[in-house]
Image (cartoon, rainbow, N blue to C red; front, side):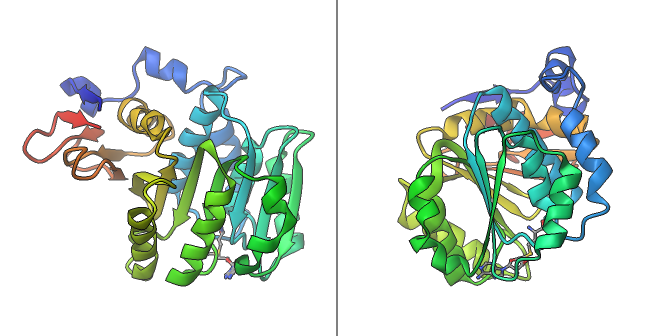
Length: 282
Ligand SMILES: C[S@@+](CC[C@H](N)C(=O)[O-])C[C@H]1O[C@@H](n2cnc3c(N)ncnc32)[C@H](O)[C@@H]1O
């Protein structure tokens, strides 16, 4: 268990010098990939809000700095809005699998071209229902080698459970699984399916962050790295990406070890429990 004690300035102000250094990409430019994505996202139809974009960019940048490598998978691509950000972070020698039962190949190709991915990234599209993925040879070929998986296909509880089972076969030890429409009023069954899966299979995934419509999960043995990131880097990372947010950790780890992120609340960038709001325990 770790904890972060906040000073007032850390809780309420923008990035300090050390944090700013962490925001720099490999080319030295602050949030360069985020800025590049901002330039193309308006031209792609889809469902991927600014808050979620900033959280993804911060986490993908953290993976890059932490030398986390692997393939990527998205179930539910539409025109490739979120896939384009994945493409920007995809690493040479690895695959990006894009699965959709109503695959819109020309639109997706357009989005991926705008993302200008690195040379040597292999994009594979699969047109089909994600329930059929379990018997696709790609599952064996890329078993436990994915560092980023986004589930955004059919929003029934049954489909989400199926997609999480697929993700369990594919996610690497240090990867991240993202599930769309977690805590959405329109799809309460998605929230139920994610929480039920984690409760029934605690050795597969641990939830570490939720907010801006998404749930973020990691393998139980590496979730501490992502929890530490949420406490120590995410607030400044979101600020650096122009997002006025609050990262909250509002109860004891033994009760629920999950951060939340949403629009700025009570003027704080990082907030602990109601009874001790400057102490973040995880
Ligand atoms: C909300 S959209 C995806 C949005 C996209 N990720 C974005 O960034 O805009 C959901 C997509 O899931 C696809 N889909 C729905 N049910 C599916 C299923 N059972 N298997 C595979 N794809 C499915 C739909 O065709 C649709 O393109």
